Amino acid sequence: MKSYVQDGDKVVVAAPRALTSGEGALVGSMFGVAEGDAESGADVVLVTTGVVDIAKVGSQAWTVGAKVYWDNTNFRTTTVVSSNTLIGVAMAAVGSGAGDTTGQVRLNGSF
Image 1 (cartoon, helix red, strand yellow):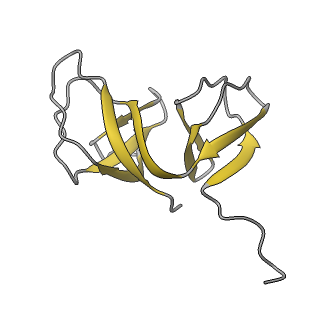
Image 2 (cartoon, rainbow, N blue to C red):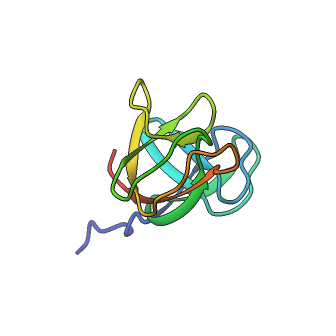
Image 3 (cartoon, rainbow, N blue to C red):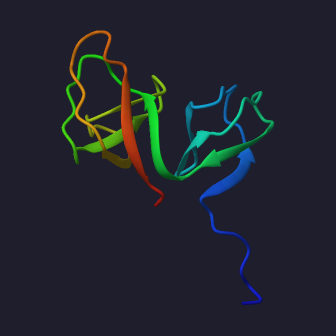
């Protein structure tokens, strides 16, 4: 097809802030996880689909299939809707202990 550009599983955008590999980022309505480190404003590859381990609120227990949102103020995932952006679903159950700060999320890739 002449108009095809790319799959879109990974996109290159200007980093909205300094990012390290594995950190989430919201660019407008688009969410992805940084594939590598980038300074604020520099090009960064964001992974927009697939399953990733990502920072979460430690005080929340997750169940498999629970909706997961991005908290763009604290730069971590949460199950609280509020004004947060839906980014996918939990792929693994995780506890609510203070040390339970990583969750596994299937990114929905939609905006």
